Image (cartoon, rainbow, N blue to C red; front, side, top):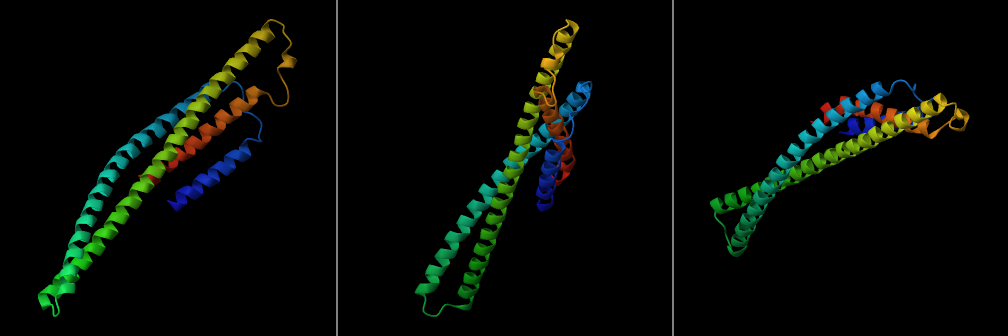
Length: 196
């Protein structure tokens, strides 16, 4: 998990650096759209897998919490009997020791199950954030295509293209952001094996 978080931070940092590079070629919308669609399919598949893992982890956490509570009550009952007995027998001492060990074991299992559930929920949340980013990227790509088509129509009509073009236009920004998200999603999809 630590390695995955490190890779995610490295990816975001390198993706941020790419934003300062020139925008992608305007003729490759289909390629960017295909990459976004592939990344979306992969992220959705991972999301479905994590939804199921969360369901199972929730049931396991509830089960171990119930078991831990039952052993806590048994441990307390044995301890109360031992406190009221001036000289407990060897079998009573053995029973008390067993009750303490079982209570401790059940408590540890409950904590482990709760920690696993938190981990699954965190991974699921990250995947859903990625899906949201991909949806935004697809919308930005559609907007960028519309702007380019409008620009081409104006050029064909002999309109003033210079008014739309500049060192950095909103089209460039939209297309650059869509490309960045596609690349980041592809890299995250390659890491999804570490989320299983």
